[in-house]
Image 1 (cartoon, rainbow, N blue to C red):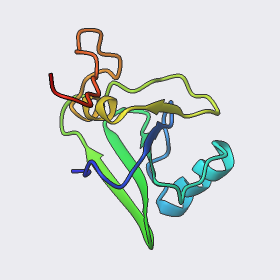
Image 2: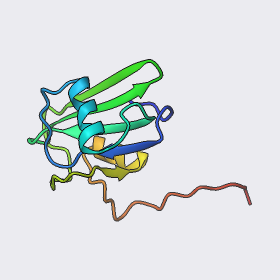
Image 3: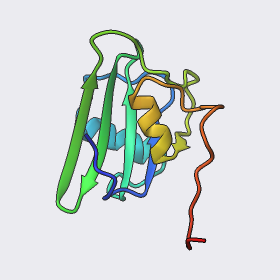
Image 4: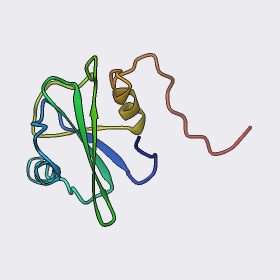
Length: 118
């Protein structure tokens, strides 16, 4: 499982991505199609057209990580519209997605950032 440290943003590549692509192919999509830096401290998440496989590309100070997840049953609630821009989501939304939920949870509590205790 991904740790909560080591990345600032999470980007989803909408629509289906060819899962035969490995690190270099996915990094090229990030750089050329999305105009983003694959060496940044971000996660780039890709899904196949059947919505049952994910790849997550992550740069870590001296090399790439390629996380892979395959569902035995069910599908990911993946944004289907394929466009040239990735969707920026929060860590919380990523966890919802990985748990099989929609990234648009209408009944979830709002995230609170507290600085003091009453």
